[in-house]
Length: 202
Image (tube, rainbow, N blue to C red; front, side):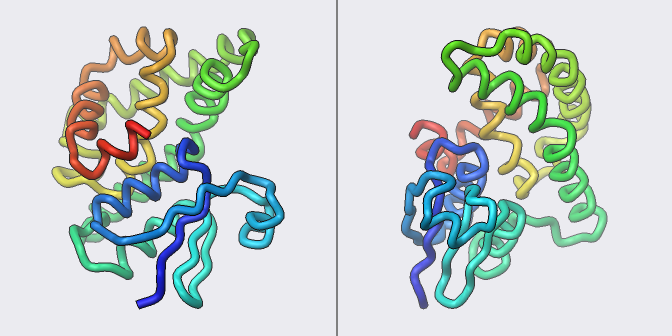
């Protein structure tokens, strides 16, 4: 079987989503920690972003495509529900992540607080109300089931956990997560999984 290569910097939240999927499936792979916008990454992704995947003749970019391929092309625990309703819920939560969760939580709070020096305090303050709303919505959902799409981990959980993990490292995140007990309990369940420990500690 050809070598599977995941291209992307290991601290990227979306690269971590793919690393978690690979770990949960038990897939052997090579990690190419390429940075965005390099000539190599621009050759794989028209916008030079991360992640990208190479597996023999298969070349992919965009996290959902990469993670679905990982789940469907390899043996191991299924990361997508078998029933139509479960798959729809999984896709719903991934869509919510992309449209409503990532922009305020990751882009306005986490990146500004953890990666920018100095941080843009106005941007962080502007992102907090929508971050609180998004956390409240997923907290309600995680009060109904152990994971986003039911009682088993799916790709939806793989998308959220890197960002919530990073959010917990910020003072703003500590305050917000203190109000969302279901999210906090889910995060601890995720952190306890063998497949996630190495990814989140890197």
